[in-house]
Length: 326
Image (cartoon, rainbow, N blue to C red; front, side):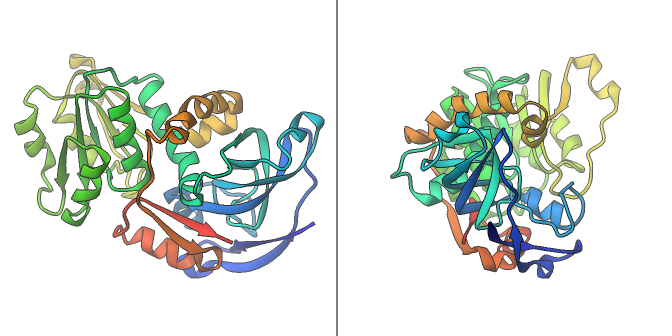
């Protein structure tokens, strides 16, 4: 079976993408074949394109999550999904017309779910639910700071934190043009970094005794800034490095106040414990299907215009989620 994908032979800027045709392998006992309706664009794809995240190849086909329809299955167990409209995570890249996916990481959705919602939700909903309910666990009445809160993960995390009972959700956004999007998602307070780069001062004025949880996808010097507003027994969860620079913490900044810095990757969880990732998705998806979590800021691109989507994402001018439609 032939399929088309946007691939690249060497790492580099967005111009490396080209349209290529491939043979799709037969599904093994754990897999299904999916005809892709739309795929989402994630910052991890940008890092993979630059050679900073692992991706199979060359040629390389990136893309993590998708909405589509199952066309074939490797076993009778997976056959129940054939013909179903699903969201999920690919074993092969989702910047494509077709892909292979682990049947444990494919989830049936309503036929009438809008493509923008369906394409936007898998990685966003799985990551945010895991960030807020696993080891770190946001407590009802808790106070949380969310970095990059006008991006896809950020806007979803703001909504999820409110759903899980947060008292205060402080959203950090890159520019004042993004304030309204974060407020509309339910943020209690929004700090625009172009106006207030020293955000700990603003937050300390709002919450003098500090916050219990910080979600940080930026790292670099922001980790030290976060420590200025993290209360005793609080936790910073680092789940990305969009600044391109790792954050640095010394143990003496932690042990005397029982604070913690931890890391999380939903991709690592999917690779090492697909059934555990599946359980998280089963718990998280009802927030979307019930309408409690919404994706109001989604920008559509043609699959074959993926270079523009990457340029726009890297410009940091975008709000919400970007998706690709074959």
